[in-house]
Image 1: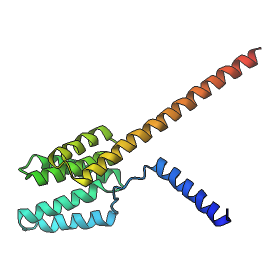
Image 2 (image 1 turned 135 degrees about the horizontal axis):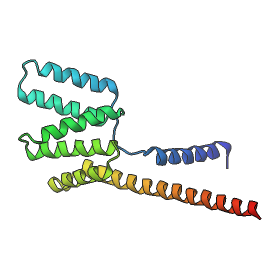
Image 3 (image 1 turned 90 degrees about the vertical axis):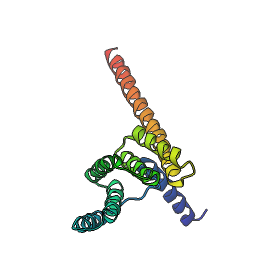
Image 4 (image 1 turned 90 degrees about the horizontal axis):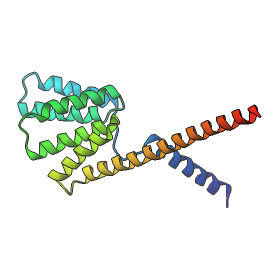
Length: 172
């Protein structure tokens, strides 16, 4: 095997390990400048635009916030979406808001709430690919976190057993 093939295999291995520990999923992230642009759109729309345009701008801002890398943005997006769910929505709007809420809870680490919301989306639209993809990402994340938890617990047990063995050996 050539040196470049070996390097490619090693690189591929490290990328997969990195993806595993970083939670590499297919859900897009949003840059802060997009959030700022959406906030500007909402501010402009509040200055006399139609309610429909304002609602569209708020939905874009909500999307940007729950896809942000900044936890405070994600929390703000969740709050906006929860507040807007109470208003009269078409089934399509409800589905979109539930999906964005599911993304927000996924990003904030509340996987059970995210799963509940993704399943609600799928009850409204069973063939909706985005919700199916999100549900799979949640399931994968829960499995991965379980594997990491088991590894941490096993390491802890090993350290305790090693400490006891060392103490007993020292005592003799």
